[in-house]
Length: 303
View (cartoon, helix red, strand yellow):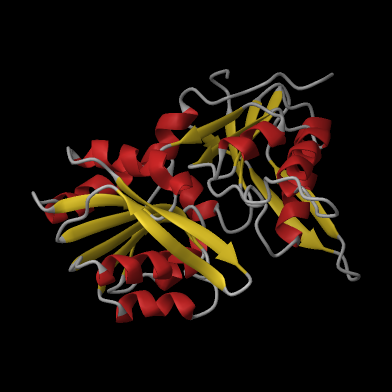
C-alpha cells in the first residue's frame, strides 16, 4: 500500500473510521432516488490511491448494495487497489454445501471480486471453510487482546476458558494465551436439531469459574445451552466473550438470568454501542484496525 492510501467508511462506520489513526479519509455519500435505487458519490480523489472500504455486508440488504456499488465506484474512478475491511464478515456462516441451498460465503466472494475488491480483512472469521469459499485473500484478525484488560481481573487459579463447541476451540485457546491461563481449554460437543442446540458432553476439566469464548452472539441459543450445562456441572462464575454481538431477538437476555456476570463484545457492528449496559460491555476495535491497516492485504486492481 502506498503512503497516499485512503480509508473509505460506509454509512454508520464514520465514528469508527475517525478513531483509526494513520490514514486519510474519503467519504462516500450513499443516497436514494425517489424509487429507492441507491447511488454513491465520492467526496474526494481516489485515482492512483490504495483504497480500503470500511463497512459491512450484514442486513439490511441495502448495506450490501452500498458496499458493492462503492467498490465499483472506486475502481471506476482510478483506485490503484480496492480492499474491503469488513470487521464482521456477514454470510460466512453459510459455509456448508447442501443440496438445494445457497452457499452465501462463496457468493459473497464472487460479488466482492466482481465489484473490484481484491482482498478482505475481517475480525475472527467464522471458519476456514468460509475463508476458502470466499476465494479472495482474507486476513482474519484475532480480537483476544482487546478483551484482556477487562478480563484479567477475572482470571484466578480456578478459571477455565471454555469453547461452546469444537469450532470455537482455536479462538478459546487464543483467549487463554492472551490472558495467561495455563489450564487446558475445555470444550463442549453440540448437536443441532429442529428443537435447537443441545450439548452432549464436555471435553476437559471444569472448575469454579469459566470464561466462555465464541465468535458470534446472534440470538444466544448456543451460549445459553452452554451456560446452562456449565451451571449444571457446578460452575459458579460465568463470563462470556464474543467477538461479534448481533443480539437479535430477546432470548439472549436469559444469559443474565443464568447469572452470567458480563458479556464482553466488540464494536465490529457499530450499533452495538446502543446495547452497552451493565451486562454488555463493548470494546473498540479501533486499535486493532490501526495496527492491521499499517500492512493490509491488498491486490492490484485490474486496468
